[in-house]
Amino acid sequence: MAKDETINAIPIGSDASAGTRTYFKNIIDAISQIQQFAVMERSDYEIPEDFLTLRGSLNFFSIGFGNGFIEGMVFTLLLAIIMPLTHSEYLMELVSLSFPLARSRAFLWMLNLLPVIIAVTLCSYLSRYRIGKIAKRAVDALLVGRMFSLIIKAIIIFVLLIAFYNYNDVVAYGLGRSLAKINVGFGHGVFLTISKMKEHLLITAFRILAIFTGAILAPFFTIWLVSLYRAYQRKKAERFWME
Image 1 (cartoon, rainbow, N blue to C red):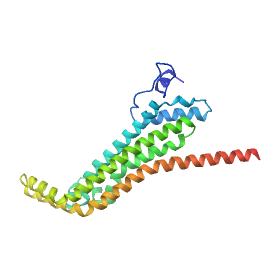
Image 2: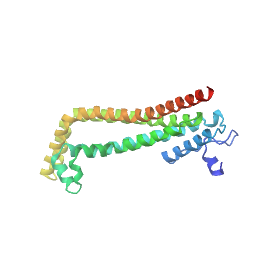
Image 3: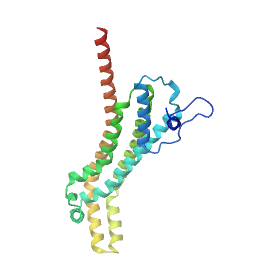
Image 4: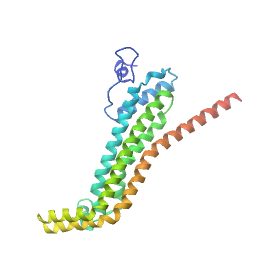
Protein backbone atom coordinates (compact mmCIF):
# COMPACT_ATOMS: atom_id res chain seq x y z
CA MET A 1 0.00 0.00 0.00
CA ALA A 2 1.35 3.47 -0.91
CA LYS A 3 2.47 5.85 1.77
CA ASP A 4 -0.31 8.39 1.23
CA GLU A 5 -2.89 5.60 1.21
CA THR A 6 -1.52 4.34 4.51
CA ILE A 7 -2.04 7.78 6.01
CA ASN A 8 -5.67 7.71 4.97
CA ALA A 9 -6.24 4.20 6.30
CA ILE A 10 -8.28 3.76 9.48
CA PRO A 11 -6.29 3.26 11.67
CA ILE A 12 -2.67 3.14 10.46
CA GLY A 13 -0.86 1.44 13.27
CA SER A 14 -0.70 0.42 16.88
CA ASP A 15 2.10 2.67 18.18
CA ALA A 16 1.67 5.92 20.13
CA SER A 17 1.65 8.08 17.00
CA ALA A 18 -1.00 6.03 15.23
CA GLY A 19 -4.40 7.50 14.59
CA THR A 20 -7.12 8.05 12.05
CA ARG A 21 -7.93 10.83 9.66
CA THR A 22 -10.12 13.27 11.59
CA TYR A 23 -12.77 13.59 8.90
CA PHE A 24 -13.36 12.47 5.35
CA LYS A 25 -13.87 15.39 2.97
CA ASN A 26 -17.07 13.87 1.59
CA ILE A 27 -18.96 10.62 1.20
CA ILE A 28 -16.99 9.75 -1.95
CA ASP A 29 -13.79 9.66 0.11
CA ALA A 30 -15.50 7.42 2.67
CA ILE A 31 -16.72 5.04 -0.02
CA SER A 32 -13.24 4.99 -1.57
CA GLN A 33 -11.80 3.96 1.79
CA ILE A 34 -14.41 1.21 2.10
CA GLN A 35 -13.46 0.04 -1.39
CA GLN A 36 -9.85 -0.28 -0.24
CA PHE A 37 -10.93 -2.37 2.74
CA ALA A 38 -13.08 -4.56 0.50
CA VAL A 39 -10.29 -5.09 -2.05
CA MET A 40 -7.88 -6.21 0.69
CA GLU A 41 -10.43 -8.54 2.30
CA ARG A 42 -11.56 -9.91 -1.03
CA SER A 43 -7.92 -10.75 -1.78
CA ASP A 44 -7.70 -12.70 1.51
CA TYR A 45 -5.45 -10.00 2.94
CA GLU A 46 -5.31 -10.52 6.69
CA ILE A 47 -6.59 -7.37 8.44
CA PRO A 48 -6.43 -7.32 12.25
CA GLU A 49 -9.72 -7.10 14.16
CA ASP A 50 -8.77 -3.75 15.69
CA PHE A 51 -7.74 -2.19 12.37
CA LEU A 52 -10.91 -0.13 12.39
CA THR A 53 -10.82 1.60 15.78
CA LEU A 54 -13.66 3.34 17.56
CA ARG A 55 -12.32 6.60 16.14
CA GLY A 56 -12.42 5.13 12.67
CA SER A 57 -16.01 3.92 13.10
CA LEU A 58 -17.00 7.38 14.35
CA ASN A 59 -15.44 8.92 11.24
CA PHE A 60 -17.68 6.80 9.03
CA PHE A 61 -20.64 7.56 11.32
CA SER A 62 -19.89 11.28 11.01
CA ILE A 63 -19.72 11.26 7.22
CA GLY A 64 -22.99 9.30 7.11
CA PHE A 65 -24.61 11.76 9.53
CA GLY A 66 -23.35 14.74 7.53
CA ASN A 67 -24.51 13.24 4.25
CA GLY A 68 -27.95 12.58 5.74
CA PHE A 69 -28.08 16.16 7.02
CA ILE A 70 -27.24 17.63 3.61
CA GLU A 71 -29.70 15.28 1.94
CA GLY A 72 -32.46 16.32 4.35
CA MET A 73 -31.58 20.02 4.04
CA VAL A 74 -31.73 20.01 0.23
CA PHE A 75 -35.00 18.07 0.39
CA THR A 76 -36.44 20.65 2.84
CA LEU A 77 -35.38 23.62 0.71
CA LEU A 78 -36.89 22.06 -2.40
CA LEU A 79 -40.06 21.31 -0.44
CA ALA A 80 -40.30 24.94 0.68
CA ILE A 81 -40.10 26.04 -2.96
CA ILE A 82 -42.29 23.35 -4.50
CA MET A 83 -45.18 23.33 -2.00
CA PRO A 84 -46.35 26.88 -2.84
CA LEU A 85 -46.09 26.08 -6.55
CA THR A 86 -48.27 22.98 -6.27
CA HIS A 87 -50.97 24.91 -4.38
CA SER A 88 -51.05 28.13 -6.41
CA GLU A 89 -52.09 28.15 -10.05
CA TYR A 90 -50.86 31.73 -10.33
CA LEU A 91 -47.32 30.89 -9.15
CA MET A 92 -47.24 27.72 -11.26
CA GLU A 93 -48.18 29.63 -14.41
CA LEU A 94 -45.70 32.39 -13.58
CA VAL A 95 -42.82 29.95 -13.17
CA SER A 96 -43.87 27.82 -16.14
CA LEU A 97 -43.29 30.81 -18.47
CA SER A 98 -39.56 30.25 -17.97
CA PHE A 99 -39.72 26.59 -16.95
CA PRO A 100 -42.61 24.73 -18.68
CA LEU A 101 -42.13 21.52 -16.67
CA ALA A 102 -43.30 23.42 -13.57
CA ARG A 103 -46.86 22.70 -14.73
CA SER A 104 -46.31 19.01 -13.97
CA ARG A 105 -46.91 18.14 -10.33
CA ALA A 106 -45.40 14.70 -10.92
CA PHE A 107 -42.18 16.33 -12.14
CA LEU A 108 -42.11 18.67 -9.13
CA TRP A 109 -42.42 15.73 -6.74
CA MET A 110 -39.67 13.83 -8.58
CA LEU A 111 -37.50 16.95 -8.37
CA ASN A 112 -38.19 17.15 -4.64
CA LEU A 113 -37.24 13.48 -4.21
CA LEU A 114 -34.08 13.77 -6.31
CA PRO A 115 -31.63 14.23 -3.38
CA VAL A 116 -33.18 11.23 -1.61
CA ILE A 117 -33.02 9.08 -4.77
CA ILE A 118 -29.36 9.99 -5.37
CA ALA A 119 -28.38 9.29 -1.75
CA VAL A 120 -30.24 5.96 -1.63
CA THR A 121 -28.62 4.90 -4.93
CA LEU A 122 -25.17 5.88 -3.65
CA CYS A 123 -25.65 4.03 -0.35
CA SER A 124 -27.07 0.98 -2.11
CA TYR A 125 -23.95 0.95 -4.29
CA LEU A 126 -22.08 -0.01 -1.12
CA SER A 127 -23.73 -3.45 -1.16
CA ARG A 128 -20.97 -4.80 -3.41
CA TYR A 129 -18.34 -3.79 -0.84
CA ARG A 130 -19.97 -5.09 2.35
CA ILE A 131 -17.65 -8.09 2.58
CA GLY A 132 -15.28 -9.13 5.33
CA LYS A 133 -15.27 -7.85 8.88
CA ILE A 134 -13.72 -4.39 8.45
CA ALA A 135 -15.60 -3.32 5.33
CA LYS A 136 -18.90 -4.47 6.88
CA ARG A 137 -18.29 -2.43 10.04
CA ALA A 138 -17.37 0.65 8.00
CA VAL A 139 -20.47 0.37 5.79
CA ASP A 140 -22.78 -0.20 8.76
CA ALA A 141 -21.29 2.76 10.66
CA LEU A 142 -21.86 5.03 7.66
CA LEU A 143 -25.46 3.87 7.22
CA VAL A 144 -26.26 4.18 10.92
CA GLY A 145 -24.92 7.76 10.92
CA ARG A 146 -27.11 8.60 7.94
CA MET A 147 -30.07 6.90 9.61
CA PHE A 148 -29.81 9.00 12.80
CA SER A 149 -29.48 12.21 10.78
CA LEU A 150 -32.57 11.45 8.67
CA ILE A 151 -34.62 10.44 11.72
CA ILE A 152 -33.86 13.79 13.38
CA LYS A 153 -34.57 15.70 10.16
CA ALA A 154 -37.84 13.80 9.55
CA ILE A 155 -39.08 14.58 13.08
CA ILE A 156 -38.19 18.26 12.73
CA ILE A 157 -39.94 18.61 9.35
CA PHE A 158 -42.99 16.71 10.63
CA VAL A 159 -43.28 18.94 13.71
CA LEU A 160 -42.84 22.11 11.61
CA LEU A 161 -45.54 21.04 9.15
CA ILE A 162 -47.96 20.23 11.99
CA ALA A 163 -47.21 23.60 13.60
CA PHE A 164 -47.71 25.31 10.22
CA TYR A 165 -51.06 23.53 9.93
CA ASN A 166 -52.16 24.68 13.39
CA TYR A 167 -51.09 28.29 12.83
CA ASN A 168 -51.77 28.48 9.10
CA ASP A 169 -54.46 31.18 9.41
CA VAL A 170 -52.29 33.36 11.62
CA VAL A 171 -49.28 33.04 9.31
CA ALA A 172 -51.37 33.64 6.17
CA TYR A 173 -53.03 36.74 7.62
CA GLY A 174 -49.86 38.20 9.16
CA LEU A 175 -47.62 37.62 6.13
CA GLY A 176 -50.30 38.66 3.65
CA ARG A 177 -51.03 41.86 5.56
CA SER A 178 -47.33 42.76 5.82
CA LEU A 179 -46.71 42.20 2.11
CA ALA A 180 -49.89 44.06 1.17
CA LYS A 181 -48.26 47.25 2.47
CA ILE A 182 -45.68 46.85 -0.30
CA ASN A 183 -48.04 45.56 -2.99
CA VAL A 184 -51.71 44.85 -2.37
CA GLY A 185 -52.07 42.29 -5.15
CA PHE A 186 -48.95 40.38 -4.11
CA GLY A 187 -49.97 40.37 -0.44
CA HIS A 188 -53.42 39.05 -1.32
CA GLY A 189 -51.88 36.35 -3.53
CA VAL A 190 -49.57 35.20 -0.71
CA PHE A 191 -52.51 35.09 1.70
CA LEU A 192 -54.54 32.90 -0.67
CA THR A 193 -51.58 30.60 -1.44
CA ILE A 194 -50.78 29.95 2.22
CA SER A 195 -54.46 29.50 3.08
CA LYS A 196 -54.92 26.92 0.31
CA MET A 197 -51.91 24.95 1.57
CA LYS A 198 -53.62 24.20 4.92
CA GLU A 199 -55.79 21.34 3.70
CA HIS A 200 -52.73 19.57 2.29
CA LEU A 201 -50.31 20.10 5.17
CA LEU A 202 -51.37 17.10 7.27
CA ILE A 203 -51.15 14.60 4.43
CA THR A 204 -47.84 16.15 3.36
CA ALA A 205 -46.46 15.77 6.89
CA PHE A 206 -47.23 12.05 6.97
CA ARG A 207 -46.06 11.65 3.38
CA ILE A 208 -42.71 13.15 4.40
CA LEU A 209 -42.44 10.60 7.23
CA ALA A 210 -43.09 7.82 4.72
CA ILE A 211 -40.48 9.20 2.30
CA PHE A 212 -37.81 9.50 4.98
CA THR A 213 -38.66 6.03 6.32
CA GLY A 214 -38.14 4.63 2.83
CA ALA A 215 -34.93 6.63 2.42
CA ILE A 216 -33.63 5.19 5.71
CA LEU A 217 -34.65 1.56 5.13
CA ALA A 218 -33.91 1.17 1.41
CA PRO A 219 -30.08 1.12 1.67
CA PHE A 220 -30.19 -1.24 4.68
CA PHE A 221 -32.48 -3.69 2.93
CA THR A 222 -30.56 -3.45 -0.35
CA ILE A 223 -27.15 -3.96 1.25
CA TRP A 224 -28.21 -6.67 3.71
CA LEU A 225 -30.25 -8.61 1.14
CA VAL A 226 -27.34 -8.57 -1.29
CA SER A 227 -25.06 -9.73 1.55
CA LEU A 228 -27.43 -12.58 2.41
CA TYR A 229 -27.66 -13.59 -1.25
CA ARG A 230 -23.86 -13.53 -1.57
CA ALA A 231 -23.52 -15.69 1.56
CA TYR A 232 -26.10 -18.13 0.18
CA GLN A 233 -24.24 -18.37 -3.13
CA ARG A 234 -20.95 -18.95 -1.32
CA LYS A 235 -22.40 -21.77 0.82
CA LYS A 236 -24.04 -23.27 -2.26
CA ALA A 237 -20.68 -23.30 -4.05
CA GLU A 238 -18.99 -24.87 -1.00
CA ARG A 239 -21.61 -27.65 -0.89
CA PHE A 240 -21.14 -28.25 -4.60
CA TRP A 241 -17.36 -28.78 -4.24
CA MET A 242 -17.78 -30.98 -1.16
CA GLU A 243 -20.08 -33.41 -2.96
